[in-house]
Image (cartoon, rainbow, N blue to C red):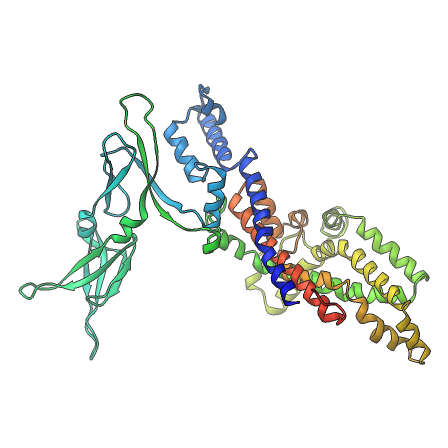
Length: 499
């Protein structure tokens, strides 16, 4: 059985790669991406200001008839990651290809500022080739990073100094926020990807001086691409970027184009809402459907069985989001009764409520969404439980138990019930994915800020990093949930052994 689960875990890798490659490729090829949306916004803004003109080139037609300089268009393509082929973009998203974190464009021999106080230029070597070398000028960097303060030495302690980036602001030299405390001789990481340390001045001088180690800076800033000159005699334009292996394998899911913040933070904010509704829906579904299925099996063919079956399948035939909309109209203060609020997760000013008011308000906002979430799973779980128990009640071991004179309740709930839970174990494995519980349309109807509404908004606005982040979490949880279901099979039924 161990080898079986090892193979199952190893199969997660190609399955995950297949899912992400397919979705990633589709998103890169469909029209209406973030670049096109930004161009449409630019077109709308220029039309509002009366500056929009007719397009003249193919690139201008792609931008909706706006004349955009080629350099600006290339900068936008690089910002949204569309300047590389799709395979390179995918490897860069995984973290297996160095990502261009920042970038500046310049021509050979032209000086340009990279970061605080650092100038760079590109030198073409050798003559006639397309190999480029980067030259740095760290003079300003060494001038601005200085000793800003000498701290008092505690009794028995060591001397400490403050290394700060100094800047003339007004008529005084001011210490900026980038300041770090360090002991003389100790290296410390400074903002800007350089290291610095304080050294005591020669004996004949007074004070301390700053020594910088710029090797990390020289290592990470590279020439990443260049464009051929448009006409003969021109000079190529070179792109100098700070490269770094940063992607899924390093824990970096990218930055959201819509929320302007890391994808991890955007998704993390939705965890409490999704876990809340996922856990409540999961527990209520099993706590209601399993007993209901048992009683339907015991009273098979009775009026209770027929009435509950009609109700259950009626609910199954209604989409959850449609039922949610009807409930809001009926009970949300629309045309009928005002019993429940019109969506949202909590009322405004919830943090200022008393404890009892918080509890009642949360329950008030929970009832209708949970009903919409659960209406679809009631029929499947109830019918599976009923049919499984009916099948086991017809087995020889059950008839033998009745022949021995055992009570019906003991036969049903001790002998047959455990074996009837085997099909239900498949759903129990999905407990791992409860944080992704929720429907896009249900959360849209109730305006619940969970994973569903986040995915819905991200798809509409083509926020690819967020869509891929949700895909990664959802696919991994479901893959591991399937393995967890197999483990539950073996735990519930000792006869099941995977080989």
